[in-house]
Image (cartoon, rainbow, N blue to C red; front, side, top):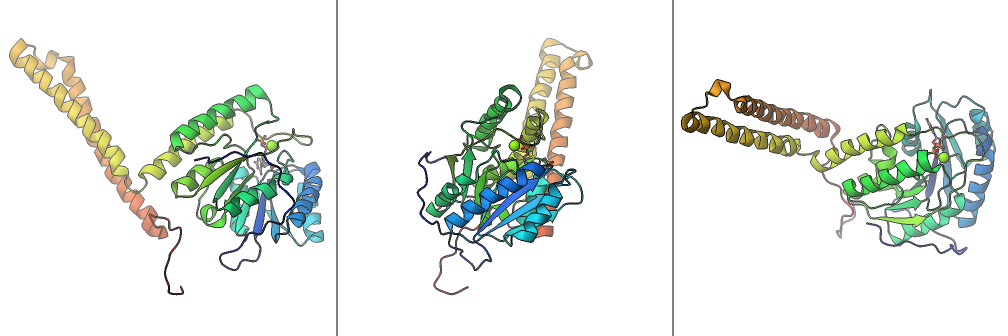
Length: 340
Ligand code: UDP
Ligand code: MG
C-alpha cells in the first residue's frame, strides 16, 4: 500500500489544493485538545506561519475535549484574534476519537489534516503532506520514524500494534498511531468513529478504495503537559481492529462468517456422530457410554446456534444499512458528458 518513502525537504513553492466543488476553505486542520494550555499558543503561531507560507486558504479547528486547565481560555483568545480559528467546546471529556470526529464534522476544507495539540507533531510537515495529496493520494500518513516517547510503555507496544494492524488490515503502514495525517474530504467524511478508532482511519479508508501513502514526519518530545495514555490503549486498539476488520470484510454478509463456521460445526458433528454409530455397530461400544456422543451433540448445537446467529446478524445489518440509507459501495468518480 505504501508506495514510496521520501525524505526530501519541501521547497518553498506554493501548494494549491484544488477544490472539486466550491468549498469555503481548501484545508482544515483539526486538533483535539485536552489539558494543553501551555502548548496552544506556540502551536498556533507555528501553524499559522506555515499555512500562510504555503498559501492555501485554511481553517484551524480546535476541539476542547473537556479540558480542566486553562486551555479553553487560551482557545477563546485565539478565536477572538484570528478568523482562521474555530473552537468547538465539548461538554465533557469524550476522548480523542470523539473530539476528532466533532472537529471533522465541523470542518469544511477539501483536505482535512489531523494533528495533536501537544506540539509533538510539527506543522512544518504540512506542506509535504499537501504535496502528496496533490499528487493524487487520498490519505497521506505521517510516520514518526524517530519517535520521542518512552520505549517500553509506548514505542514497543505501538510497534507491535502497527505490525498486527498492517497484517490484519492488509494496509501496511509504519505508524498508525501518529495523528498527523492528511485526508481528502471524501474519504474521511463518511467514517463513523467509535472507541479509539481514529487510529484505524487509513485502514478503513483503504477498504473503501482510497489510495494511501506514507511520509516520514518529525516528532518532538513533549515539553508541556502530560501524555493522556498508557499501555491500556494498545489493547483497546486491538479490539477495535477486530471490530473494524469484521465490519469491513463481512458487514454486508455476516451469514458468510457465522454460517460458514456453523456449517463446519455441523459437518464435524455429523462426522463424530458417524464414528459413534460405527463404534456401536462394529465395536459394541454402548452409545451412552461413549464420550464422543457428547461431542457430536455439542457440535450440532453449536452449528445450529452459529447459523441462527448469522441470520440474526443479517437482519441487524439490513437495518443498519437501510435505516441510514448507507450504500454498500463507494464511488470514486462518475464519467459522463452530461452535467450533473
Ligand atoms: N486528547 C483529547 N482527549 C483525550 C485525550 C487526549 O483530546 O481524552 C488530545 C490531546 O490533547 C492531544 C492528543 O489528543 O492533543 C494526543 O494526546 P497525547 O499527546 O496525550 O497522546 P500521545 O501523543 O501521548 O499518544
Ligand atoms: Mg502526544
